[in-house]
Image (cartoon, rainbow, N blue to C red; front, side):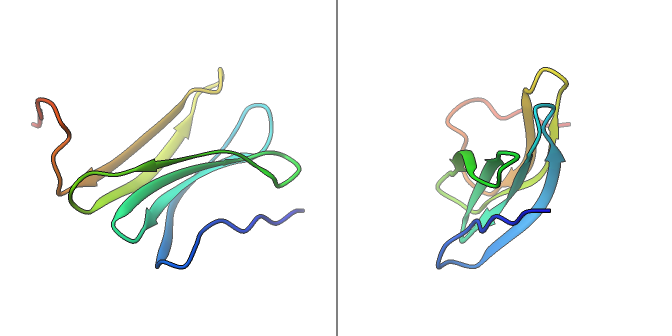
Length: 88
């Protein structure tokens, strides 16, 4: 069992976590008005981190990791994505 501290001085919220096939996990959530994704290695160190931001509030709400390690993040935003927005 290990521990990793992720986050900063803003109001951080985690919404989803998924195991990585090589060990460790990916956690997604929101920090202030931006979404985030962090990959944590089996030893507890941060393997990578990504901010997910628009000009509005952006939430990374869930995550899945494929057997090949590809990370899929779903969420929502009130901002513009910079391209065509398609919904159903």
